[in-house]
Image (cartoon, rainbow, N blue to C red; front, side, top):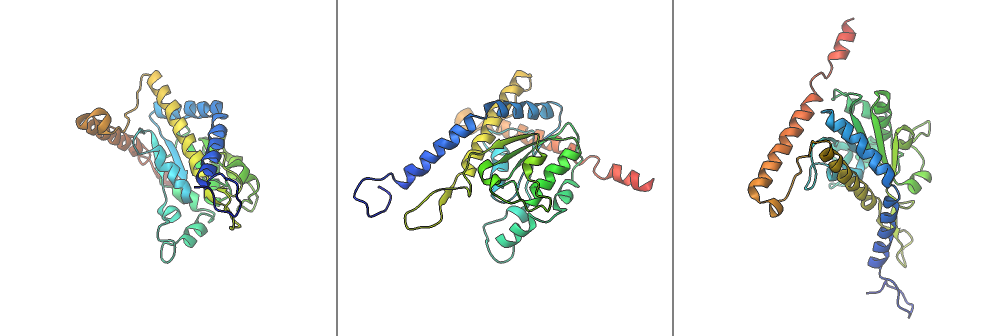
Amino acid sequence: MAAAGSSNFCKMSYTQDFLGKCQGLIAAVSQQEEKIQAVAKLFASSILAGRMVHIFGSGHSRIMVEEMWPRYGSFPGFNPIVELSLTFHNLVVGANGQRQAMFLENVSGFAKQILRNFDLSDQDSAIIISSSGCNVVPIELAELFQQQGIKTVGIISMEHSQVSTSKRQDGLKLQDFCDIVLDSGAPAGDAMVSIEGLDTPVAPGSTVGSCMLINCIKAELANLLVLAGAPPKVLTASALVGADRAAELFQAAYDEHAHRVSRLYKKVGIASYVSDQN
């Protein structure tokens, strides 16, 4: 069906409009292949060293955290940092409502409390997703990673970030603390489709573009691990490999994740305790 309107001539449907815009997102991601491969090399280095890639997103950027790990076609090596207070959206109002989440993601010092839980290493790497790149918690998280020598990747929507104002007092944004910055290709304001009779656009694109970036990284990274002689344990559907093999892969992947993540807690607080005693 054509898009609504009083005109007599045939118009593109809103579905085709959105899908056409998504083709633009594909083109934007495709133009970043060299950067994507650089990210994969960075992450491979951490995983092959027995360490982890920390992945964080507040708000709806949490979607990309879970897109990376754990889900079908994914593998261990990632530490998904998901704060429910920043990402628990379905209640919208009332206790645990959206207003509180939007407030908390701009509370300075919250990121430090998050990372206080982990024994970090400069062999780690990180990826932080924030469409605007302007909220305080993701920015401070990247800043803290940078201070500890952890190479950090940012996924933002460049056009949206450029016209958005940082919530930090110094005006710095996520990309100011990242070693590599990837662009989802989404437009300013994120929403991509204009509806006749509606003065604000709908149908955001950052999730589409960011998910493509995540899975491009995942594919390039899997190849590098295979070439290094350490093929990843991929969560795989039983429809592809049979129930027994699928169960074997799931258990092996979860066990590997447990062993990797245990290293992130092994020395938590020990260094600061010794320092305090001296």
